[in-house]
Length: 446
Length: 159
Ligand code: FES
Ligand SMILES: [Fe+2]
Image (tube, rainbow over all chains, first blue to last red):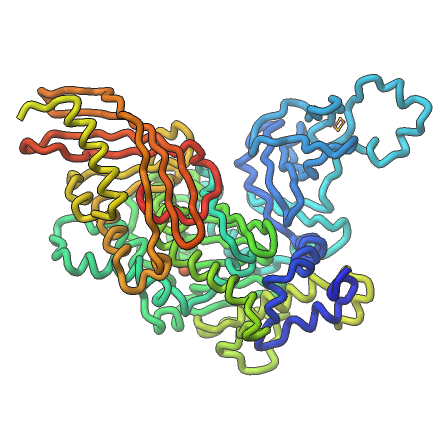
């Protein structure tokens, strides 16, 4: 035990209104406590139900550092189980996805389990006859996580058995997810292919912070977006030739500070928030033939215009995902250690919409989020330099003070200047609450 | 000019050497204007449009990529990366002199390094070449990484 375990006051002291201590990003004990508390007490994204469309389909992933299986049971419900055999601990599923039929069977001693986790059968059962096996924990089968909620296809889990409800945790922030789904003329999304997987040698919060950091694009992305603009200007592009797609996707990253100031940031309680309240880098995409008509047909012109008028840039669902409604994309920042994060970038098809929309979504993903993407290179370089720099003894604190005016109430929704760091402060407000609430002596942190 | 299998094979070797030596403008000139450099994400991926790829770049994107490598503010290239291709003799899968159309299949090991890090990728490159005005050009290039579904850090140069 070090200085932070069972010491909620010390953990809470890492977060001040205008700055946070570097230990939140680099300390191994803090990381362990995040896994035990923060990722247990909050609702964490697991997967999309279109990844397991038929009974017996499963998908393996992590909630925090916990390996889990998302599986569709015979009653069509989605269950989320710890990926651990109740016998000796063997991981039950190793493939990233598949279909297990009516039951899971452990490859070690062939205990088998229904797809809701219940123990189905054990070979040589009579060996347990005299042992009061039925009273053991193992007899219950594969353990489910504390709670599961499917919101319009997006499956979230809370590891803790007791805790905040899904509705109370997300509240009005669900409007961003809803908008992404409503953009389908059938009100439904489907995952399109496997995610891009990109390994980052930095803390998971670096990535989450960056989603609402609106003062970096024009600086860090000058090499990609800036060069795109320069190259295009120098090309004397003929009027009648279609503009390079890079100009629609990448060039807006070079928008000036004023653009980002004006676009606004909205924060919601519990660490959620989004950039792009009034407009965003997604606002000026060209129209796709047939799409507006399909939307008008479903929703009526007024409602369709309202749905498509939302161009939220990045919505952070605390703790560790970001979605982009206008381009149907979700990024999952999966913690792998204090200095290591796996990013999985998913794209979704708007069911009932023209394929051209999905083609743009796929293009965005590979141009911005791939380990081979020049835009991604710009960002990763900064995260890794920051992670290295934080280990220096030069200073203990990270500044998140931009547009801080004193005494912020994070329990209310707010809309502010788009370059504020309020959303980062909002995340840390939630961070210290969910980190400490289940620690012994948690009153001490108040 | 009468083209031989050796010419095709030499071309593939010459391209790899250009990349290793950072002769990018020369490399860009190998390409036909409407060609694509494709690096699928999925093993045996058939569609570059409706699922994600690691790369599917047209001429403008390739030029942007190259231009960026030399930029003053390209922080991820300070210091610069270097790469190294070791290639096995290409198979010439299609050899149609009449149509000026050739397809090769080449196994390679690609090494990229920057600072203290170095990584290795095993890959198969499929080149579609065309003879235009007596000169071989790349019509399309597809690179299948052996571990295309693995999580990578930055891959900054061109396998
Ligand atoms: S460890 Fe799973 S059946 Fe023994
Ligand atoms: Fe960025």
